[in-house]
Length: 417
View 1 (cartoon, rainbow, N blue to C red):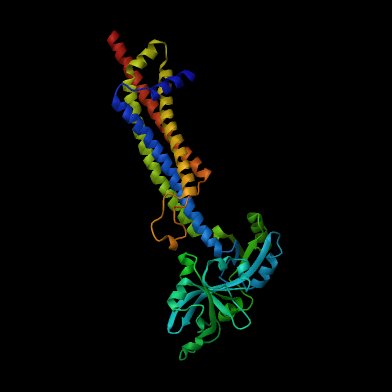
View 2 (tube, rainbow, N blue to C red):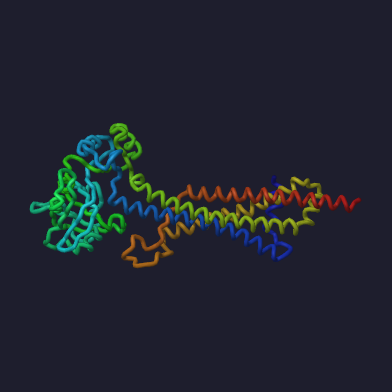
């Protein structure tokens, strides 16, 4: 194997007889370099955007959420919260109530997503870190308060320092409704607005309002029910182990979900986009394979005299074929390794220096530069793809070389006759 490798390396680095062959060889290697570097960079950028999105959602989403398997309400939310709070690794467990309601302020109104939470909810969620006006406050000695997202605050024209009540309405769930007096078909409550938050995620900023838990339960006609129980774990706790223990303790009537499971659709969509981009760039790498094959075909023609010399020195046809198969692997390998290294270097530089900026108002964006998160598993996938491309190139090269040698030996036989 050492002799074919030395000869193949010599063919790769030596100056070719025709300048066009030199240029085509360089272009082939550069095609593989650019394609593999682009694959590493694109996958890392998708990872970066996913981390940014999940990081923003983690501000308001619980680390673990427990919901009912059927229906949207669990009948004994308080009991479930108390039961799981004693599991090793759990710091906090709080029942919450979420549903749709109508919010009104002065002559303005809009449907909102109302979430009732305990008074110390900021200990479980980091919502107090995204308050842009006012403060996080649900209750004091004087009154009860609501904290609204920026969307409802703008639509309803309400601010924390306004003295008017924010009125909330929800349809009655039980009892008879008098159609001649539709206003009695709603349960209502009123609160002051204490603060406005902005997560810079439309799912939350568009319509969310936080209120005290008992306000939401009274508005939706609940007592101890909860739509979900939210939990916070101790630092360094084994999330999967805690979830398995909760699931065993609660049984099949409850679902235990971490943050990724809570946003499974969004997470799946990001992954689909990521791997679709991977496939598109993989096709470019495959197209670059044809350049390598054409380059090797030209090299085989150019090295016709060298092949004859090798055979005259006693080299067998398999050995000569092996030289050009190794040459195909060298072209693919040099290009792939160089591209991966280049992609890794570019990702590390972008991660530390943020050279490539996002267009738009930097003050209104979560990040000002393209986020990058390099994962070695993605690098491994790119390397495996490059190896697959190299294998295809080697097989095609072997077939071309065998035909070439057969044609040469046939011509030599005819000449001798």
